[in-house]
Length: 94
Image 1: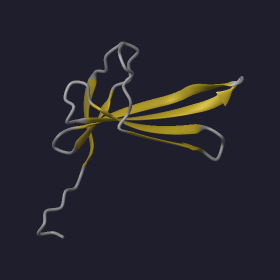
Image 2: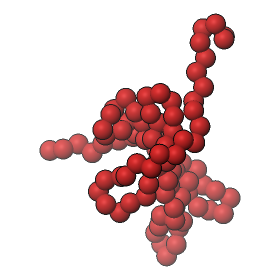
Image 3: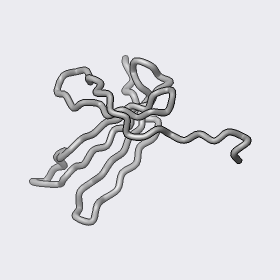
Image 4: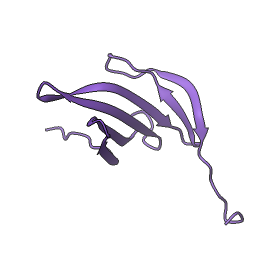
């Protein structure tokens, strides 16, 4: 029996207009040393939660972030888009 994968961390909050905002952090499937950050906005309507919008980003080993392209296929195509580079501090900077 296969176990369902779980995110490393997940957070959710209700917005002021009642929508649910979720953030989940996963190990990347291709390279587990990388991470995927998934953001989802859901709206309660007709007695159920419907997804309004999704976004996903990949954090590479070198600290860059790329937005993953939205797709309905079972795979996600990478679109190189560096949003920002994570800052790292050396011991000398501290």
